[in-house]
Length: 485
Image 1: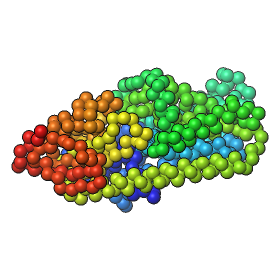
Image 2 (image 1 turned 60 degrees about the horizontal axis):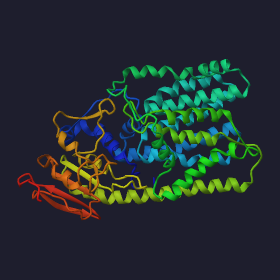
Image 3 (image 1 turned 90 degrees about the vertical axis):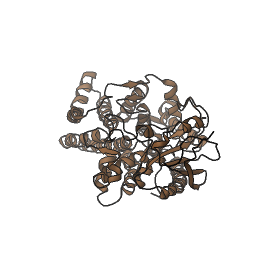
Image 4 (image 1 turned 135 degrees about the vertical axis):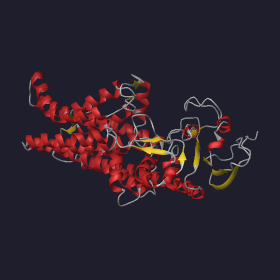
């Protein structure tokens, strides 16, 4: 909450969708460009939360509030689950907390992150009831929570299912049950989770059967390395290495540490999914990477101390968590303040305009995430504008374009490099991309971090405002739009 706005990579495009949902019925400028149709999707956690809160506040504030609650919810679930497993908060339980700021959240996958955070709370509550012998109430909890989490995001629902099944299996194995009895126990305990699958019958998705990038272990290895990626690569990689090392303590230091099967079994199930799931599934990109953080968190929660550890170890774990939180907060504040300065240019944009926003990045893979790649979506939020870079894939989003609403404009890339870049799928130079922009359909061109890069702008494009390395240009429809060489 310290930052002006939590600039998660994809979040601005999501906030634009929330804005359209809230304001479309009484905003003619939006109705020129967009349609919005509520229907069931297993991807609505933050959408529904913002729709509810925006009755009392604007969508930016509502989205900021909901996004800010995701890490605390996940942290509460991890601490609670760790306490129920071990009877106290262990050092490795503390070490799981930075995973609530893992790269899926930085990427802006807010629906799936919310669903995964809630799944930890539900699992901890379920285990609490099970330990107290209130098995009927534990089944009721799962039956009530399941439709909530599957609606929030299907990946969170899958994580919750694997957690409940894994905890039940680990508990049965600990008690010495034979394999068939373990399977029977798992089936009975997980049964209350199954009924919301009926909701998927109402999900119309053209990409339901699609999946891509199977068994890309090189990509998986990169994601493992980048799980805490924020800004400082040495610190982020070392932090990830510390967590992986702590999770392996039962193997590395067997005389001091053991594994609690109630957390280890679901962790193993999730790790199997990390490496066997495709990167793209049913329209969701980076599906496997979203499972790394909960898998690693459960691996840490599984670590049980065979002998009491010195207090300084617990203190060191607390200091590490605090340091990660401070660094994350400073980074959020810095990038959000820069975004605020960029967004000041939108004060010069006429409401209901057509805007192309392009962020210039380096073709080299920087450690710093591409935080500003969807910043242009705020043109919709603050100026009711049509802008490129929205998410409107068939079957995956509730917002769509009206027929023939400047498709060429919305297809323009929101992130480019100066020269052709294979990593970005960019075959042409920035100059060629700008030259081919649909100038007759553009009212404003917003060049973010463009610096002094020479571009073939038409005479009709007149610079009206600058900030830092960015420029805002007004395109005059009455002047020649032929690009200058």
